[in-house]
Length: 128
Image 1 (tube, rainbow, N blue to C red):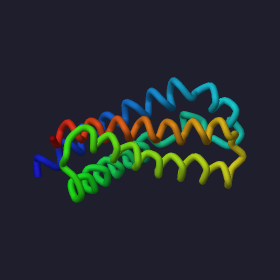
Image 2: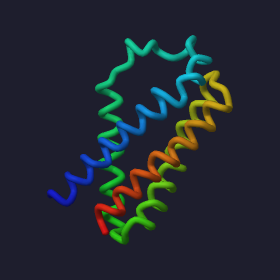
Image 3: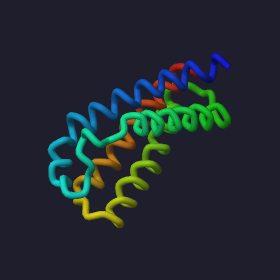
Image 4: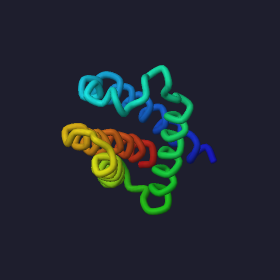
C-alpha cells in the first residue's frame, strides 16, 4: 500500500503546485478575458480543485502501475499522453461549448501536456 499511496501523494502535491503556477500566475492574464463566464476567485471551490487533483493522482498512479514500471522515460511518455488526452478534452471540449478564446483552449492543452508530463516523470522516478 505504501508503494501506491506515497506516489499518489507526491503526484497530488506536484499537480497542486503546477496548477497554482499555471492557473494562478501564467494564465491569469488570459483569464481576464473570461470575467463574464468564470466564477470570481472568491467563489471557486478549493476543495473541488483538490478533489480533482487527488482523483487524477489516483488514476495516473493506478494506470501506470497496471501497465508499466519502467522508469522516468516511460513515465514521461505516459504523462504526456495522459496530458494530451486531458488537455484536448478540457481545451477543445470547453471551446466548443463556451465562448472562450482559442488561445485559452491551446494554453489548456499545452498546460495539460506539461503538467501531466512532469507528473509522469516524477512517477517514473518513484517507480524505477
